[in-house]
Image 1 (cartoon, rainbow, N blue to C red):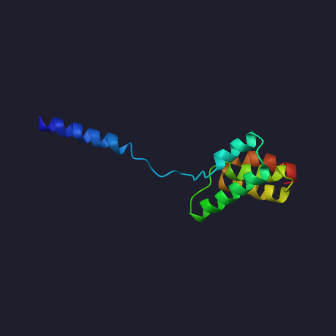
Image 2 (image 1 turned 180 degrees about the vertical axis):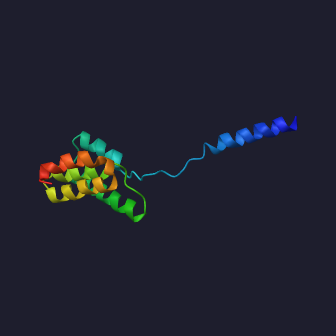
Image 3 (image 1 turned 135 degrees about the vertical axis):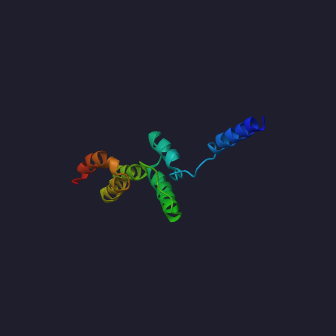
Amino acid sequence: METIEHFWVLIFIVCLSGCVSSPPLYSWGDYEAQVYAYLNRGNLETQIRILERNRQEIEASGQITPPGFYAHLGMLYAELGNHEMAILYLEGEKARFPESTVFMNLLLSRYGR
């Protein structure tokens, strides 16, 4: 009888260990809120300022920006006509997430890249 009880205790412990959360892979900062602001025609300069601050904080802490963060920032700069910064961030997205290369190259082709 004790063997069965030990078995259930072991099963319970194994199940609980599956509930332990691991640290997040990416640090999102205010990225999601800024995408929402963009879609609702928020102020582009404010969005850039917030995302730039987030990027600096994320990278200073040794964490990783999420997929799309650099691309979104690049597109914000592009909308303001700052193509140099747009290219810099689109290239940055491509370097961080190689799976985005085809799409980033399509966006970069707008700027002669």
